[in-house]
Length: 288
Image (cartoon, rainbow, N blue to C red; front, side, top):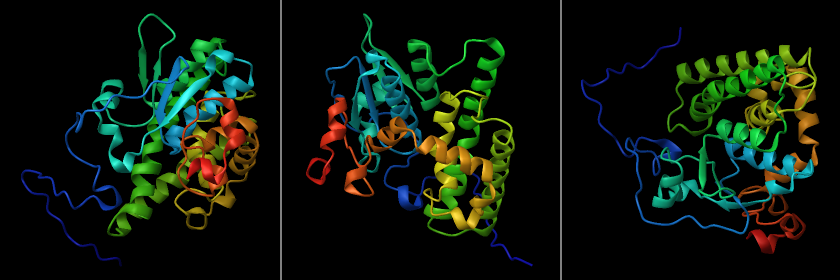
Protein backbone atom coordinates (compact mmCIF):
# COMPACT_ATOMS: atom_id res chain seq x y z
CA UNK A 1 0.00 0.00 0.00
CA UNK A 2 1.33 3.43 -0.94
CA UNK A 3 2.07 5.72 1.97
CA UNK A 4 1.26 9.40 1.58
CA UNK A 5 2.90 12.23 3.46
CA UNK A 6 0.41 14.32 5.36
CA UNK A 7 -0.11 18.00 4.79
CA UNK A 8 -2.45 20.18 6.78
CA UNK A 9 -3.31 23.46 5.04
CA UNK A 10 -2.78 26.51 7.26
CA UNK A 11 -5.72 28.61 8.31
CA UNK A 12 -4.56 31.37 5.96
CA UNK A 13 -2.55 30.65 2.82
CA UNK A 14 0.64 32.66 2.35
CA UNK A 15 2.83 32.93 -0.72
CA UNK A 16 6.10 30.97 -0.62
CA UNK A 17 7.98 32.52 -3.51
CA UNK A 18 10.41 29.63 -3.79
CA UNK A 19 7.76 26.95 -4.02
CA UNK A 20 6.81 27.23 -7.69
CA UNK A 21 9.16 24.76 -9.30
CA UNK A 22 10.30 25.57 -12.82
CA UNK A 23 8.04 28.63 -12.99
CA UNK A 24 8.66 30.10 -9.54
CA UNK A 25 10.07 33.30 -11.02
CA UNK A 26 6.88 34.18 -12.91
CA UNK A 27 4.11 32.74 -10.76
CA UNK A 28 2.48 35.15 -8.32
CA UNK A 29 -0.89 35.53 -6.59
CA UNK A 30 -1.59 39.05 -7.87
CA UNK A 31 -2.23 40.54 -11.30
CA UNK A 32 -1.25 43.77 -13.00
CA UNK A 33 1.97 45.06 -14.61
CA UNK A 34 5.39 44.83 -13.04
CA UNK A 35 7.08 47.33 -15.37
CA UNK A 36 6.30 49.95 -18.00
CA UNK A 37 6.84 48.94 -21.61
CA UNK A 38 4.66 49.52 -24.65
CA UNK A 39 3.94 46.72 -27.09
CA UNK A 40 5.55 47.08 -30.52
CA UNK A 41 3.26 47.52 -33.53
CA UNK A 42 4.20 46.37 -37.00
CA UNK A 43 2.88 47.11 -40.46
CA UNK A 44 -0.13 44.77 -40.57
CA UNK A 45 -3.54 45.29 -38.97
CA UNK A 46 -3.26 42.02 -37.02
CA UNK A 47 -0.67 42.12 -34.26
CA UNK A 48 0.04 38.93 -32.31
CA UNK A 49 2.02 38.80 -29.08
CA UNK A 50 2.86 35.23 -28.23
CA UNK A 51 5.19 32.29 -27.69
CA UNK A 52 5.02 28.89 -29.41
CA UNK A 53 3.50 27.01 -26.50
CA UNK A 54 0.50 24.85 -27.47
CA UNK A 55 -1.85 27.78 -26.83
CA UNK A 56 0.29 30.09 -28.93
CA UNK A 57 0.57 27.59 -31.78
CA UNK A 58 -3.22 27.46 -32.09
CA UNK A 59 -3.30 31.06 -33.30
CA UNK A 60 -0.27 31.05 -35.60
CA UNK A 61 -1.61 27.89 -37.24
CA UNK A 62 -4.97 29.61 -37.74
CA UNK A 63 -3.36 32.69 -39.27
CA UNK A 64 -1.19 30.62 -41.60
CA UNK A 65 -4.20 28.52 -42.62
CA UNK A 66 -6.16 31.67 -43.40
CA UNK A 67 -3.34 32.97 -45.57
CA UNK A 68 -3.03 29.61 -47.32
CA UNK A 69 -6.77 29.75 -48.05
CA UNK A 70 -6.33 33.10 -49.78
CA UNK A 71 -7.39 35.53 -47.04
CA UNK A 72 -4.83 38.26 -47.67
CA UNK A 73 -6.23 40.34 -44.81
CA UNK A 74 -4.89 37.77 -42.37
CA UNK A 75 -1.30 38.97 -42.84
CA UNK A 76 0.12 39.55 -39.40
CA UNK A 77 3.08 40.53 -37.27
CA UNK A 78 3.98 38.00 -34.58
CA UNK A 79 6.01 39.44 -31.72
CA UNK A 80 7.88 37.17 -29.34
CA UNK A 81 6.87 37.35 -25.67
CA UNK A 82 9.45 35.62 -23.49
CA UNK A 83 7.28 34.50 -20.60
CA UNK A 84 10.19 33.17 -18.55
CA UNK A 85 11.54 36.72 -18.54
CA UNK A 86 8.19 38.13 -17.38
CA UNK A 87 7.50 40.08 -20.57
CA UNK A 88 3.79 39.26 -20.21
CA UNK A 89 3.73 41.55 -17.17
CA UNK A 90 4.64 44.72 -19.07
CA UNK A 91 2.14 47.58 -18.94
CA UNK A 92 1.49 47.22 -22.68
CA UNK A 93 0.82 43.52 -22.49
CA UNK A 94 -1.44 43.82 -19.45
CA UNK A 95 -3.43 46.51 -21.27
CA UNK A 96 -3.99 44.01 -24.08
CA UNK A 97 -4.62 41.07 -21.77
CA UNK A 98 -5.32 41.76 -18.09
CA UNK A 99 -4.78 38.04 -17.44
CA UNK A 100 -1.11 38.30 -18.53
CA UNK A 101 -1.13 35.10 -20.57
CA UNK A 102 -0.10 34.47 -24.16
CA UNK A 103 -1.40 34.67 -26.82
CA UNK A 104 -3.07 38.02 -27.31
CA UNK A 105 -4.20 39.56 -30.60
CA UNK A 106 -4.78 43.23 -31.32
CA UNK A 107 -6.74 44.02 -34.49
CA UNK A 108 -6.01 47.50 -35.86
CA UNK A 109 -8.15 47.13 -38.99
CA UNK A 110 -11.04 49.24 -37.65
CA UNK A 111 -11.39 52.77 -36.29
CA UNK A 112 -10.34 51.57 -32.84
CA UNK A 113 -8.01 48.69 -31.95
CA UNK A 114 -9.77 45.54 -30.76
CA UNK A 115 -7.99 43.35 -28.23
CA UNK A 116 -8.74 39.63 -28.11
CA UNK A 117 -7.27 37.37 -25.46
CA UNK A 118 -7.67 33.67 -24.65
CA UNK A 119 -6.67 31.38 -27.51
CA UNK A 120 -10.16 29.98 -28.10
CA UNK A 121 -11.62 33.47 -28.30
CA UNK A 122 -8.94 34.47 -30.82
CA UNK A 123 -9.70 31.45 -33.02
CA UNK A 124 -13.41 32.22 -32.96
CA UNK A 125 -12.81 35.93 -33.62
CA UNK A 126 -10.64 35.20 -36.66
CA UNK A 127 -13.02 32.53 -37.97
CA UNK A 128 -15.93 34.96 -37.85
CA UNK A 129 -13.89 37.86 -39.20
CA UNK A 130 -12.83 35.92 -42.30
CA UNK A 131 -15.74 33.49 -42.59
CA UNK A 132 -13.49 30.46 -42.51
CA UNK A 133 -12.94 27.23 -40.58
CA UNK A 134 -16.18 27.60 -38.61
CA UNK A 135 -19.34 26.05 -40.09
CA UNK A 136 -22.36 28.30 -40.54
CA UNK A 137 -25.02 25.57 -40.51
CA UNK A 138 -26.38 25.60 -36.93
CA UNK A 139 -25.83 21.94 -36.00
CA UNK A 140 -22.31 21.82 -37.47
CA UNK A 141 -21.42 25.16 -35.89
CA UNK A 142 -22.63 23.94 -32.50
CA UNK A 143 -20.57 20.75 -32.85
CA UNK A 144 -17.45 22.72 -33.77
CA UNK A 145 -17.82 25.17 -30.89
CA UNK A 146 -18.57 22.37 -28.46
CA UNK A 147 -15.23 20.74 -29.27
CA UNK A 148 -13.45 24.09 -29.19
CA UNK A 149 -14.71 24.73 -25.69
CA UNK A 150 -14.05 21.10 -24.74
CA UNK A 151 -10.39 21.81 -25.38
CA UNK A 152 -10.45 25.07 -23.47
CA UNK A 153 -11.97 23.32 -20.46
CA UNK A 154 -9.98 20.10 -20.72
CA UNK A 155 -6.56 21.47 -21.69
CA UNK A 156 -5.63 22.72 -18.20
CA UNK A 157 -5.81 19.14 -16.92
CA UNK A 158 -3.14 18.24 -19.49
CA UNK A 159 -0.95 21.33 -18.99
CA UNK A 160 -1.29 22.63 -15.47
CA UNK A 161 -2.31 19.21 -14.22
CA UNK A 162 -0.48 16.30 -15.81
CA UNK A 163 2.31 18.30 -17.45
CA UNK A 164 3.11 20.29 -14.36
CA UNK A 165 3.27 17.42 -11.90
CA UNK A 166 4.90 14.96 -14.32
CA UNK A 167 7.50 17.27 -15.86
CA UNK A 168 7.93 20.48 -13.87
CA UNK A 169 6.97 20.13 -10.20
CA UNK A 170 9.97 20.30 -7.82
CA UNK A 171 8.68 17.16 -6.05
CA UNK A 172 7.19 14.11 -7.74
CA UNK A 173 3.86 13.48 -6.03
CA UNK A 174 2.47 10.04 -6.85
CA UNK A 175 -1.13 10.97 -6.15
CA UNK A 176 -1.02 14.08 -8.37
CA UNK A 177 0.71 12.33 -11.29
CA UNK A 178 -1.61 9.34 -11.05
CA UNK A 179 -4.70 11.54 -10.86
CA UNK A 180 -3.82 13.64 -13.89
CA UNK A 181 -2.40 10.76 -15.95
CA UNK A 182 -5.75 9.03 -15.54
CA UNK A 183 -7.56 12.16 -16.70
CA UNK A 184 -5.18 12.66 -19.63
CA UNK A 185 -5.85 9.11 -20.80
CA UNK A 186 -9.59 9.55 -20.37
CA UNK A 187 -9.48 12.64 -22.57
CA UNK A 188 -7.40 10.84 -25.20
CA UNK A 189 -10.01 8.09 -25.19
CA UNK A 190 -12.76 10.67 -25.73
CA UNK A 191 -10.89 11.93 -28.79
CA UNK A 192 -10.03 8.47 -30.06
CA UNK A 193 -13.67 7.38 -30.00
CA UNK A 194 -14.71 10.57 -31.77
CA UNK A 195 -12.03 10.27 -34.44
CA UNK A 196 -12.89 6.64 -35.05
CA UNK A 197 -16.10 7.89 -36.62
CA UNK A 198 -15.01 11.21 -38.15
CA UNK A 199 -11.99 12.38 -40.16
CA UNK A 200 -11.79 15.59 -38.13
CA UNK A 201 -12.86 16.44 -34.62
CA UNK A 202 -15.99 18.40 -35.57
CA UNK A 203 -16.97 16.10 -38.44
CA UNK A 204 -16.05 15.95 -42.10
CA UNK A 205 -14.30 19.31 -42.28
CA UNK A 206 -11.10 20.76 -40.84
CA UNK A 207 -12.05 23.55 -38.41
CA UNK A 208 -10.86 25.70 -35.55
CA UNK A 209 -11.66 22.76 -33.28
CA UNK A 210 -8.78 20.81 -34.86
CA UNK A 211 -6.51 23.86 -34.64
CA UNK A 212 -7.25 24.19 -30.93
CA UNK A 213 -6.93 20.52 -30.04
CA UNK A 214 -3.95 19.43 -32.16
CA UNK A 215 -1.21 21.53 -30.47
CA UNK A 216 -2.03 19.79 -27.19
CA UNK A 217 -3.35 16.31 -27.92
CA UNK A 218 -1.90 15.76 -31.37
CA UNK A 219 1.59 16.71 -30.23
CA UNK A 220 1.11 14.62 -27.08
CA UNK A 221 0.36 11.42 -29.02
CA UNK A 222 3.33 12.11 -31.28
CA UNK A 223 5.53 11.94 -28.18
CA UNK A 224 6.59 15.59 -28.38
CA UNK A 225 4.95 16.93 -25.23
CA UNK A 226 6.43 16.36 -21.75
CA UNK A 227 8.32 13.29 -23.08
CA UNK A 228 5.31 11.36 -21.83
CA UNK A 229 4.49 9.21 -24.83
CA UNK A 230 5.69 5.93 -23.35
CA UNK A 231 4.30 6.74 -19.90
CA UNK A 232 0.81 7.34 -21.29
CA UNK A 233 1.08 4.59 -23.94
CA UNK A 234 -0.05 7.06 -26.58
CA UNK A 235 0.44 4.57 -29.43
CA UNK A 236 -2.75 2.81 -28.34
CA UNK A 237 -4.87 5.77 -29.47
CA UNK A 238 -4.69 4.83 -33.12
CA UNK A 239 -7.38 7.17 -34.40
CA UNK A 240 -5.84 10.17 -32.65
CA UNK A 241 -2.49 9.11 -34.14
CA UNK A 242 -3.98 9.07 -37.65
CA UNK A 243 -5.52 12.50 -37.17
CA UNK A 244 -2.38 13.95 -35.55
CA UNK A 245 -0.22 12.87 -38.48
CA UNK A 246 -2.74 14.24 -40.96
CA UNK A 247 -2.78 17.67 -39.28
CA UNK A 248 1.00 17.74 -38.83
CA UNK A 249 1.50 17.23 -42.57
CA UNK A 250 -0.34 20.44 -43.46
CA UNK A 251 2.14 23.11 -44.67
CA UNK A 252 0.32 25.89 -42.79
CA UNK A 253 0.56 23.89 -39.57
CA UNK A 254 4.27 23.36 -40.13
CA UNK A 255 4.75 27.10 -40.60
CA UNK A 256 2.55 27.98 -37.65
CA UNK A 257 4.59 25.76 -35.33
CA UNK A 258 7.74 27.68 -36.19
CA UNK A 259 6.45 31.14 -35.31
CA UNK A 260 7.60 32.52 -31.94
CA UNK A 261 9.49 29.28 -31.27
CA UNK A 262 12.75 29.62 -29.32
CA UNK A 263 13.75 25.98 -28.78
CA UNK A 264 14.55 22.90 -30.82
CA UNK A 265 16.51 22.81 -34.04
CA UNK A 266 17.42 26.28 -35.32
CA UNK A 267 15.65 25.59 -38.62
CA UNK A 268 12.40 24.99 -36.69
CA UNK A 269 12.47 28.44 -35.08
CA UNK A 270 11.18 31.76 -36.34
CA UNK A 271 11.35 34.06 -33.34
CA UNK A 272 9.27 36.79 -34.97
CA UNK A 273 7.20 36.76 -38.13
CA UNK A 274 6.43 39.96 -40.02
CA UNK A 275 5.99 38.74 -43.59
CA UNK A 276 5.64 35.45 -45.40
CA UNK A 277 9.18 35.60 -46.76
CA UNK A 278 10.53 35.35 -43.21
CA UNK A 279 10.08 31.58 -43.48
CA UNK A 280 12.44 31.49 -46.44
CA UNK A 281 15.23 33.12 -44.47
CA UNK A 282 14.76 31.13 -41.28
CA UNK A 283 18.41 30.20 -40.76
CA UNK A 284 20.51 29.81 -37.67
CA UNK A 285 21.84 33.34 -38.09
CA UNK A 286 18.31 34.75 -38.25
CA UNK A 287 16.98 33.03 -35.16
CA UNK A 288 20.08 33.10 -32.96
